[in-house]
Image (cartoon, rainbow, N blue to C red; front, side, top):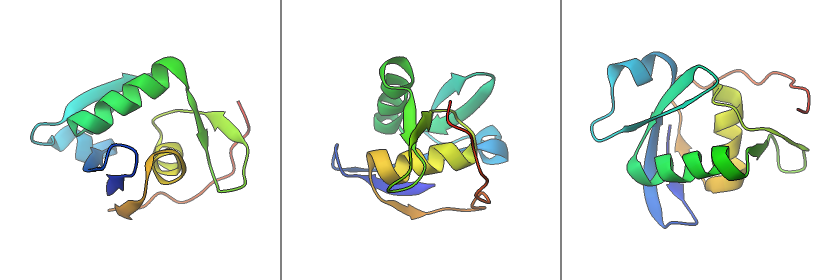
Length: 101
């Protein structure tokens, strides 16, 4: 996923699933509950801070907050609604219902 962090004023890249295994030049791994993603340094710091201090995400503009996890659907929603605009997604996850937790 690539996007632009409205808060930090910089672009970011996040690799998940098989793409994370391929590596991201200069990427920093972030792990949570057995899932690892690779992110550019600024986004990695923001994501680690969120996991440590504010581990929730909004799944839609008007939806409730749910636990922040590193599954593709939740992390894409967090990037879209909590961080800033997502510009491109390769292999976009299929939305699926998720219980609040």
